[in-house]
Image 1: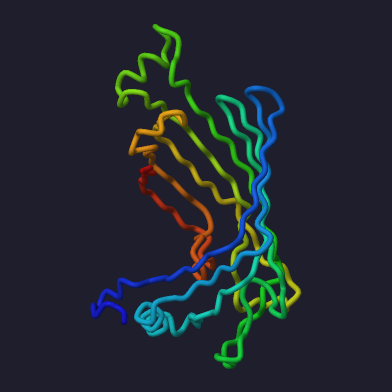
Image 2: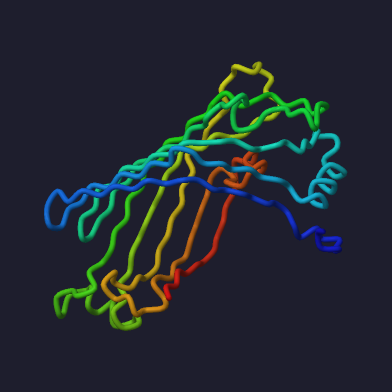
Length: 235
């Protein structure tokens, strides 16, 4: 049961699972080619009841719709790694399996005037830079590392995805493709070397995201900005 609070804190519930296969090939001692493939995955998203009811009351004139976003997908990724850089390309598409698109009308809610999605593939590219954990003495890198905890080094990462903007009531008909927007995800932080397995804190970072809202039904929003921070720990 959701929290009994007028602020309706439970906004969105996401479920994502899948089977992933990975392969890595050493081109040289310091250069590697990586392949990643998800042959089958599932993702579904449900708005909290309190949030949905509140939105329907407040946006009744705008025709707010609770849409069943649920689909089975495949995904691939290719990466090229060097000691300092990683370049990535990937994409995600859906298996139809009797359904149409990322969202579609379902029998449980036959009154929903939802037009199924027609654009069902999203490509992405990314680039990451990692500073050396052992820079030359006297270099700018060595001076910068003096302010970080011992053995940590900074990294920068940027990812671009050509995201689909969900449109549940397309005026151009069911075959009309949805609009897209380039969405950017930026990370900056510091990371422990892979060889140091005894560090509990593996990395910490600040995140900035701008573009299409990436969360389920809320992907109808095309001007969404997120600021946050995170960390990864290992035991």
